Length: 348
Image 1: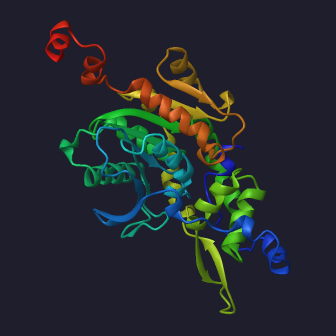
Image 2: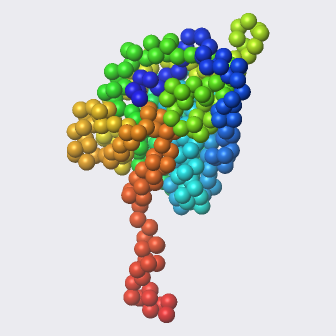
Image 3: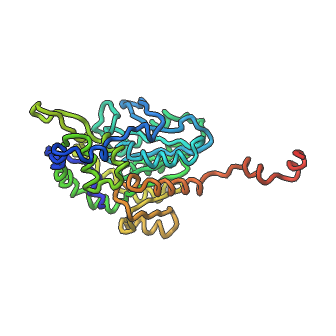
């Protein structure tokens, strides 16, 4: 699926034709029933940073000794887009791993003033401030930054800035500067072509699946409810579900999100992973950097744009392997398995 097909949400007001079908039949209601966040995260809390109350999903916040995977969603999504992959990673080592998936500014259940400011600089400040609020500077936790689409631009610039301590790795999911910049002029058309009101949450979930915006039904049942809100249809006769985040007003920021991203990513001072649905999305800058071995490339051609939702286990495996490949050596563990002669004598 082209980046243009899934980066922004609809703006014009018209109801999905799927709603009528659901009114006439109860078949499939269970199939599209929303799933609770608590099936995939241990904790949901509000964290105050600056002018915003960030809604944060997490598991293992009190864990020590292991990595912290911090996920940043794309435009129009929410932290729950990483629900399945977060659980998969956390369950691989639940006594050590921490996963954090916030709803960032103007998305999901996050609230506050100045939510319309989605500039790259503002979003980097938000990410840095949120990590500082969750983890003390002296905690020494190794941070793995993972960003999808627009979120990839945010984490790349945050890593390049060195404002976040102990960044062990940087992973971008389906975002390349070249294809993103080429698609910007088409985005308003895609916004107006999509339904922007649904008769029910189930209808919104079904639309995402039928249109192949999300190819994993379970993930859609988890993430889509956080993308819509219940409002009046304008006539006062019934309620409809409309998009929670209207991104058209943020058009002035779109160019800034992606301009220079490839160079920023390739030069970030940490280990790097790029997960794409196809090699055709690599631009010249990244092709050269990839040939020079500046980052690891993982291709998952069976997925659409929301790779983390379509193939959560494959993405989870890639991120776990990426961490293990770049984790710092545990000297105490090496000594335990290979004691020196004096240590061996002392224990005998």
